Image (cartoon, rainbow, N blue to C red; front, side, top):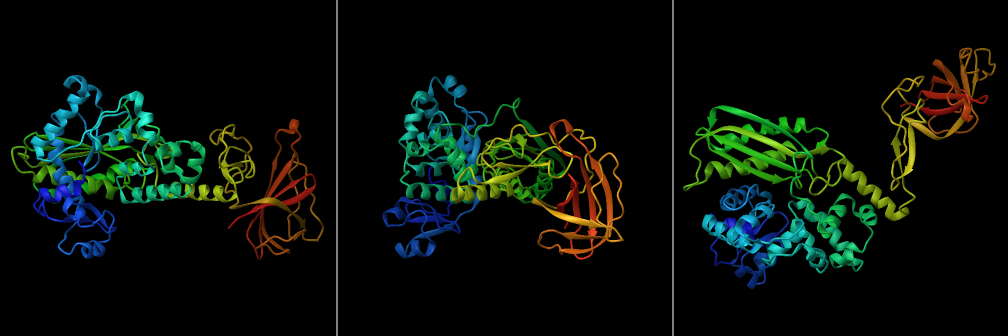
Length: 519
C-alpha cells in the first residue's frame, strides 16, 4: 500500500485527498500527497522547510496506532484471498503465494483477486507483486508485476542500492541502511549487482549483521516468511480476563504484564515473528502475525515493543465500526513468539541483533577495516585446568573449531575464582620466608613449602610494588598433566600482598612467575 501513512490519515478524515498535505515524524516528511509533491515538497524534508516551500501545506503528525488501526480494514480484505498474511509494517504485507495462486488459477489471477478484495474492504488501492524472495516481491509490487523464479537474479541485479530501503520497518533500520547505501555510493557501488560482486565475508566485516541481511536480500533470499513449526519452536503466554475488557486502553494496559511474561520466557533467545490472538465474549477470534524487525534493533522482543504492537492491533479490533465490528468484549489474549532460536542464531531475525552483541560486531568490523581483517584477535573460552589454558586467542574471522569443550569434567582443575587479569607475558617473582631465605619451587608430587613472608619482582609490573610483604597466602596446588608431551610440573599459589592486588603465582622449572592478579 504505497504512501500508507497518508492514506491512513485521509481515511480518518484528517486530510483532504486533493489538498497539499504531508505526514511527518521527528526526522522529517514520511509521506506526501501528489499536490504537495507538485509544489516542491519532498520526502525527508524538515517540517519548517516543507511549510516554507508550500505555505498552504497541511501537516499531520505520524501515528503508528492510527496506521495499524486503519490497516486492519485492508487485512480483512486480504483474509478473503490469502491465509496468514505477515505484517512487516502497516502498509506492507507479505504471504506465501503458492497455494492461493493455484486456487485462483494463476499468479496474475491472484493479484487481481487481492486488489479487488482490498478495494471492497477499504476503498484503497493495493499494489501486488509476486516473486521469489522478500526484496524481489516488494519491488515487484511497486511495479505491480510478476517476476518468474528463473529471472529473480537478473531482476534484482539491475536495481539501485536504494532499493534495499524497501524493506525498512523501523527508524533505526532506516539509518543503518542509509549509512550502508551512502558508503557504497562513495565507493562507486550503486547497484545490487555491484554490491553482490563484493565478497560476503568483506560485507560482514564492514557492516555486521545489517550488511549480511542486505546481502541476502540482494541475492533473492527470503528473510521474512516464518519457518515451519517443525524447524523452529514457539514460546507463548496467554490469559483469560474476567470481567472482560471493554476498551482498547484497558486491554493494552493488561497486555503489558502479558508482554513482560513472554519476554521473561524469551530471555537469551531471539524470535522472528509475534502472533497476537484475541477472543471476545461471543467467541469471535482475531489473529495477526507481525514480523519482529527493529523491536529493539534486533530479534529480541522487549515488553515495550510487544505492548506497542498489541495496543495497535487491539485498537483496530476493538474500535472498528461496520459489519465486521467485534460483537463482544475482550475475554482472552495470547502472545506467541514464533521462530524462536538461541540468542546467537544469526540471520533468523529479519534484521539481526541490536543489543550489546551488535555493538561488539560493529567494533570488530571497524578495527578490521583499520588494521586488517586478519590482525584483529578475540578471546574465546574453552575447557582447561588452569586459567591460561581456559582462554584461546584467535583471529576474529577464524572459525572457532577444535576448541576444548567448556562443559564436562576436568579432574585436578584449579578451583575458582580465576584472576580477573591474566598477563599476556608472565613476570618473574622471588618469594622469601620469614628468615629472608628464597623459597624454591617444590616438586609437584610433594606440594609443600615454607610460608611466604615477602616477595621481590625481577621486572616492573604496573599496579604492583616491586617488593613488599605477603600478608596472606593459600596453596600450593600442584598440577601435573600431559607429562608425555613435555609439559612441566606446575605449582600454584595465591598471595595477598600489602600494597597491591592479590596475585596468582605459578612455579614451574624452578622459577616463580606471576600468572595474573585479582581486582
